[in-house]
View 1 (tube, rainbow, N blue to C red):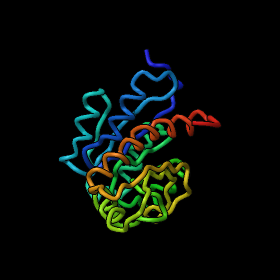
View 2 (view 1 turned 90 degrees about the horizontal axis):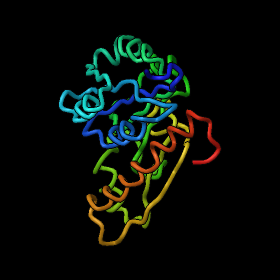
View 3 (view 1 turned 120 degrees about the vertical axis):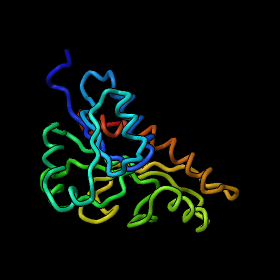
View 4 (view 1 turned 180 degrees about the horizontal axis):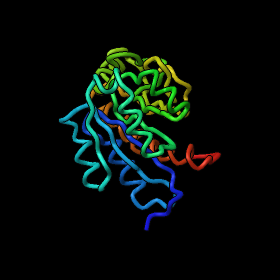
Length: 197
């Protein structure tokens, strides 16, 4: 029997879901935290299959349901989430969601915000911009969300070098290692009120 008092995470993902996979793996046998559900706005998102593999309920939703009704908020609330994690989720979260789950939604962004944030700045778009700018470092930002893209309070930033010879794909791989390492640790820290990672 699952202990009744586990903390619940709900994941939102739009794509392949490698960060979702890390969370599913990390918390599969965790004594205090579990992934309760995964939601996606993309019927082709591989994240949905990843959830199925871990026997986690997965839900697909439309733009209309997300922005013009309370249906998805209500579905999410049925899982009593202690934290909602946007793991490669590309839509802006609407006001009704933010009000229903205040300070309970975090996002991971593959750059050092406030640089390279905002609408359209995701995936290789971000890494291409960093490489083209000639920056010598990049990294990740895990932050709370608000009503603007990539503007919420920072929880953690970690950086990695950008080499002069890097392609966007090479930089992406290096940044993804940081995402996979730190996202589960930040979730644990927030839910278990740890002082340190």
